[in-house]
Each structure stands twice: as structure tokens, then as C-alpha cells.
Amino acid sequence: MAALAPNAHAGPVVDRIRAEGAIRCGGVSRPGLVGQRPGGREASGLYLDLCRAIGAALLGPEGRIAFHPYDFDAAFDLVRDGRDDLAFLDGSEILDERLAGRTLLGPAVAFVSTGVRVSVDSPVRTLADLAGRSVCFYQGSGAHRTLEAWMAARKLDFTRMPYTEYGEMDDAFAAAKCDAEAGETGDLAIASLSGKRPSRILPEPLASFPVFAATPASDPQWAAIVAWAIVTVQRAGLPAGPWTARAEASAPEAGDLGLSDDWAKRVLAAAGSYADIYDRNLGDRSPLRLPRGPNAPAEAGGLFVTPFRE
Image 1 (tube, one colour):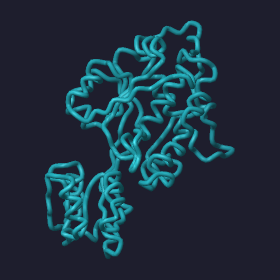
Image 2 (image 1 turned 30 degrees about the vertical axis):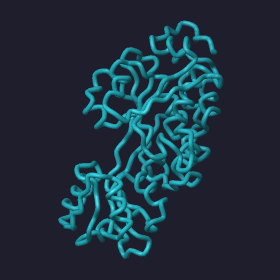
Image 3 (image 1 turned 180 degrees about the horizontal axis):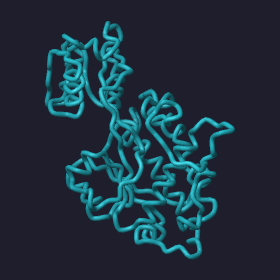
Image 4 (image 1 turned 180 degrees about the vertical axis):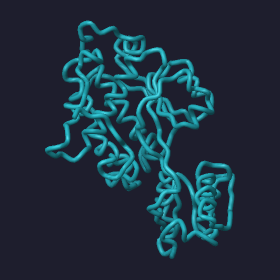
């Protein structure tokens, strides 16, 4: 393991990670972010790759990761009690579980979109084309709320077909009982893989919201390491050019974070750039084949804005 840089004082989370040789992460299961690959047995996803990359900043390639899915209420106790070192959380999860005062909020690691899918031969090409058509949705879900808000803002109406079981909703769409289905785009992409009713996701999202990297409030040093490791991964995906600073050139000095001099190179060696991570988990190299959209850097029309050295 890398020795702590001179004059740097490790925090309690940093000390624990070094002592255990492992980083403990967690997040709610979402297609492409964390979960079972379609047809696969092992867990995979963008969160796992980021966890591995961040851990490499402290532990190098020999470091281990442990991932905990927050798929039931009690699982959030791992965040509440500071037992997990890194949690991937959206705003609703932070507020609903009352975690705001127990965590330090880091940068966004992904933007989740809600959207709509229609059959491949549907005449619907834009969200506005849904006016007067039937739309299936899970009652009270985020997709339901953003669908209602989008249509209301444009004074458009549609036929509502609410469901309280996701499987029943997907079956209704497959049986052509509704013209469209609203949901998170990852879930819609997974449902489309069934092939029961060939479909396509409309390119225009209903809404997009960030998932953040959150760390225990007890250790600002660890929060800084996590934030700058994520920034390094994101900047590494920018197109190279004479006016674009390399990821390593925009990273803090190792001593400022209490890391070894090669920490940024180790982060990138562990999982690649954000573009690489996205592509194999959600993009063209994955079964989901979701476009980058808001998950692209601002320079390419997305929502990620990273600090850099001018």
C-alpha cells in the first residue's frame, strides 16, 4: 500500500480503508449502474467501476471492494451509521432517509433520466406526439410525476394507464394495451430486451436527475479524495486537444490529498475514463445501448462540468 504523504493527517475513513485494504461502497440497484448484467451471474455496473477506481487512489491495484445494494430501507443504515465508505445516492434517497447531516455530498457520478418507449412502428416521434394517446406508468413513481409535469407544462393531455406492479405494466405494453410506457430509461431498455414488443426509447427525456457520491461526514480528507478521483475519471474522457488540460494536469498535488505521486494514474488504470466506464455498462458495448445524453461532458453537450487548471 502507498504510504501517506508527509505532513498529511489521515482521517478516520482513510485510516480504516488502509487498515482493511478494502473500500466499502453501496447504492440502489439500477440497470447499468449496479446489478446483474442481462444473462450474467456476476454483479457489474458503473458504480462498481468507480468504486474500484477510487479505491485505487489509496490502495493501488491490490485493493479490494465490497459493494452493498441499498434495495430495502434497513440497508441505508450502512450510510446512516458510517459503515460504508462511499454511497451513490440521489436527492430523494438522501432526503427520504434523512442522510443530509450524516454525509458529505460529492460530485455527480451519473444522471438518471426518465423517458418513454413506444413500439418501433409507432408514429410517435417526440414527447409532444403523446397527446391524446395512452401511456402506461407505475403509479406515484418518479417517471409518473415527470410525465404529468412535462405534459401539464405544455397543456397537453393523455390517457392515463396506472399500474402498481412493474411486471404487469411491462406486460400491458407488450400486449399493446397502451401506446407508450414511461419509466427510467435503464428500466425501459431492460424491458425492451425481452423482445415481446419491439420498441424504441424516445430521444427526448422527460427529466434527468443526478446521483451523487456521498461520504461519511467524519472525514473531509476522504471526501476530497473521492471528489478528485471522480473528476479525474470524468476529465479523462474529454477529447484531446491543444486547449484541453489532461486529467492528470488538472488533479491536485499528491501531498494535498495525502496520496502517492502516481495516484491519478492508478485511478485511470483501474477502470479507464468515464467514457470507457459508461460505454461498457450503459453504452454501445453494453446490452442497454443508451446514448450518453446528459452523462456526457458539457463540452460535448452533456451536464458534467469539471474543474480544471487554466
